[in-house]
Image (cartoon, rainbow over all chains, first blue to last red):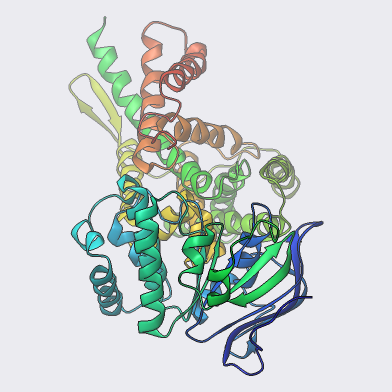
Length: 245
Length: 291
C-alpha cells in the first residue's frame, strides 16, 4: 500500500500530476504516476537508473508527450501546453548532463536562461542576483563555460535556471559529476534558495544521503511507478533503501 | 610558372570562391543548426532564378525588382520546405535519414516541376552592362566585383548576427545543445525558421548572381548545393567564417589547378583537397573538435 503523508487537496499545490502515463513512441516509461508539489516545498524523487526519473521531469515540463493522465500547474491544466510555454509560465528544468552551453560565455549562458525576458535591464538585474548567489560566476562572467570544472558548471546550470525566476525548478541529478563536498554545498544552496524565494523544487536523484537531507518529502520511483511517498524526516530515518529500488 | 596567368587565375578563383563561400555559409547555417542534410536547398537556388526570370518576362518588372522578386521566391520556397515537410516529420520523431530522403525527393521533383511549368529551354535575365577593368595583366568585370562584395558583405552580416545578437546566440544554443535550449524555453521551430530564412536568402542570392551572367535551367540548383555542402564541411560545421574559408579555398584550388591540369581535373583536385583536409582535421579548417 502506497503511503501518502500529504494530501494535495489540503495543501496549496503548485504542481499536481494525476495518473500520468508517458513514454517514447510505443515504449511506456511512466505508468499511472501521481504526485504533487506544494508552493515553497522541496520534493525529491529517488530511483535507480532506468526507473523513469528523467522521463518524469521531462513529462512534467511537457518535453515528453502524455499518453494519459492530467497535469495541473498553478491551478490550470497544462496537459496540452508546450515546453516553451511551461518555461514562460514559471517552470524550469536543469538536465542531468551538459546543463550549460559549453561554447558560450557565462554571461551569455545566463542571458539565454532569461529567454522570455525582453527587457535588457531586467536581464542584467537578474544576472547580478545570480552573481550574488554564485560569486565565481560573476568573477568569470566573460569566460567560456565549457572550461569550467564540474562543480562550477553545476552552479552555472542553477544560475541559468534562476534567470527565469521560476516558481518550480525541476533538477535532474544535480549531484552528477561533482565531488561530495560540492554536492553538500550545492544542495544547501538549493534549500536556501527555495526558502528565501518561496520557490518549489522537484529534484530527482540517486544520491539518497544528499537528497534526504534537504527535502520536505520524497517519492520513490520504481519501473516507472511511484512505490513510496514519505516525509523528509521519515526518509532520513530510513536505513535500508535498496529493497525499495 | 606564368605569373600573369597565376594572377588572373587567383582573381578568378577569388570570384568563384566568394560565391562558393556564400553557398558554404548558406548550407552550413542550416545543417549546423538542424542537422538536416538539406539537399532541397537546390530549390531556393533555382526558385530564385526562375522567380526573377518570370517576374521579368511575365510581369515585365525592371531588372532590380525582378531580382528582388526572385530573392523573395527563393526564401519563401526554402522556408516552406521547412514548415510543410521537415517540421511535421520532426514532430513525428522522423529520423534524420528519413528527412534526408524527403529532401532528396524534393530536390529531384522540383526540377521536373520547373520543366513542366517553364519548359526545358534555358532562361535568361536581361543582361546589365558589364564593363571590364584592367589591373595590370589581370582583367575583372564589374559583375565579378559586385559578386565578391555582395558575397562577403552577406557572410560578414550573418556571422555578426549569429555571434553578436541575442537571437543569434539562441541559434548557437540550438546548434550546440538542443535539449538545454528547449529547457530554457527557446522556441526551436522559430529558430529553425530563421535559419531557413538566412540559408535560403544566401543561396537565392548566389542563384541570382549566377543567373545574371549565365542561364537558368531546371537542374541548376543541385551542383551549387553540393558545393555548399563541401565548403561547409571543409571549413568546419558551425563556423560561418570556416564555411566561407572552405568555399574560398575550393574556388582558388579549382582555379589554380588550371595551371598544371586540364579544366576537367578541377573537381578531382577539389575533392582530393577536401579528403586530405578532413583526414588531417576531421572537424574542418576552423571547426571545433568534439568535446
